[in-house]
Image 1: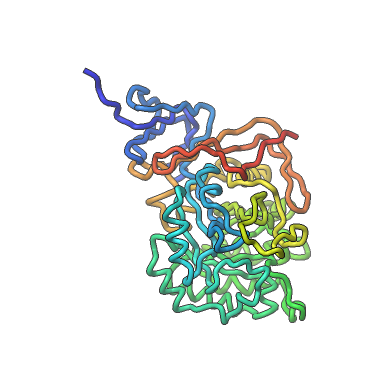
Image 2: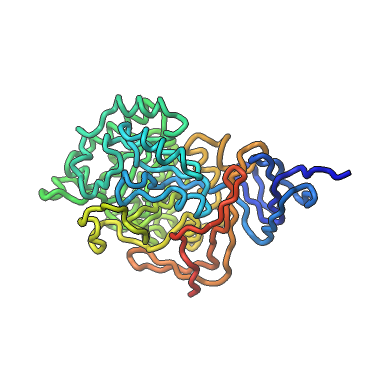
Length: 425
């Protein structure tokens, strides 16, 4: 008499790192009915219908990208295909940063979040227009373009989708309107009790009248007092003015006090990222809470959407020119090339982002009973050169690459066209 297998799938022999559960070691991960059924050593192979040998691989809770741009077509060139950035890149959960607004959230739910195979959440834009390529249309992002009541109402009515609020603190906006937009975004965050994710670093460019007396190095110290515990400072290592390192090459003294007050830091890697400035900040003890890849259509080699206006084809001059191929896993390698350990980086893409979006009971862990969201990653030995948009180079001792992920137990191979190829130094 044959005995039916206990599990549907067994990932066998990998190094399991699950910070939320305190696990780091060789374990087997068993899946049943799309849920994590067991994480332990030496589960009997005969107990599973299917076995995948992941010996020598990293087996992590499904990776969470805290800075995605996946409102495809609606946000123009910015918006990527969600599953290209998500499950096809080994990432199970995406948080779109400011693509949808209170006006466009229903479309985001129907056309993006619901059909995607990846798990999708959003930080709702503080602006009525959402993420409509503000570097071309900065006047849409004035205080007149913010409706506090409508945004609060939309966020509170959609808690399954909206996990925070997106705002911008950058010299172009301050030169035009001062700090008023940030005050309004902070008010939305307080009334919704959701984290506010604040972009730092120049974005929209200056008006013809210049800075209008605004000093980019004072933006951080003026914005941080508006923010509450759990709010997020993004792009700390930006190469543009207004990040964590001032024009004198020093880390702003307000940052450590902000961290002590419970504010969080998201790398928001993308094409803003500077290895030179990251080294300075990390040397000063600034270790990010979450990673965030910040992949969008301007910093990856993907075709522009059909009907994209000609002005968007000026690849040499737009403010986001960047790497041709990129991924969240590549960003993990980037952090390690800067001297952070794997044990420091894994929480940035698993347990910490789960806390950031208030869903530690749902994502970011391999605890028994949770959806089987799992990312399997290989590490290629050798020395690899990584380069930022300032042409600063760092050397990575080994390069991580996604192999596949499980999203609620369903396997998705890492086949995204944006995944970089490993090129040894």
